[in-house]
Image: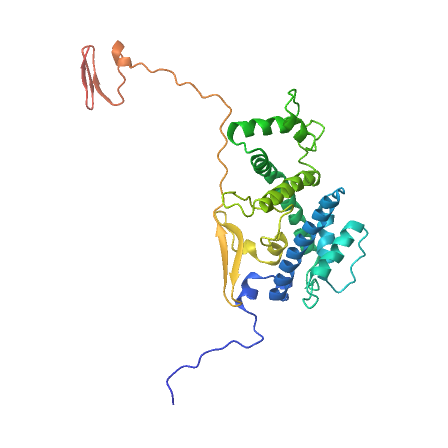
Length: 329
């Protein structure tokens, strides 16, 4: 008889620790591997389709549609296959872009499945894509304008800064032809500042930068001393997928404390799970608006012959005794 203990093995139908500890009931039933792959695949292809659509419109000189959540919802719907038949695309420009994208795509590769993905997940993904696109266009505009000025006129430093300042200023009273030309490109709001609330209006200007940079790089491709600029994209591409809807499927609050908050990352091999927590920044204490009280200046009474004794033992008209002090009158 062998003295070795038999290894305990879990029955095949026993739920893993990941599903037991971390997931809610609605989440533990999901096929996570396929769901995450399909979601990431759909977001990646929707970004490519959006770039293709915008690029075609810029090349044709046609107006760019508003890049809102509805636009990206249509892009996600066009590159996924679900249980229901997708709605027909009414926008002719987007429909042509979808057909062109599908003609480039390998027909043997299946589209991302949205069978297990609820509508709320794609809603959250499209909202994130909208925010990323707006930030990508507005935040990078000034930096790309700088590269364009340097490539076209070869100016840097204070001269370039002054030129861009005059171009983007709400008013200009000078006569510089370059400033007057560029000011005609910039879409402006009611206050004559650049219209950051409608980033789709800035895209045709960004396309001018892209077109010029690519032409210059191609023209000087055989010049070893020419420093080529990296080409840019009109809209962002996929860098990862984060969805606040995921947080609703997990028991995150069970692990969070006052000094430890969820950092948006969980790692699992299907059995064990590691949850990344971060230390939140505590708000600085507000300074009191009340004026500080002025402490009056204290003058020692002994200077004027006045003494205060706590424990008096003996006192007459000539002497005053306390526990540790003898004073003569």
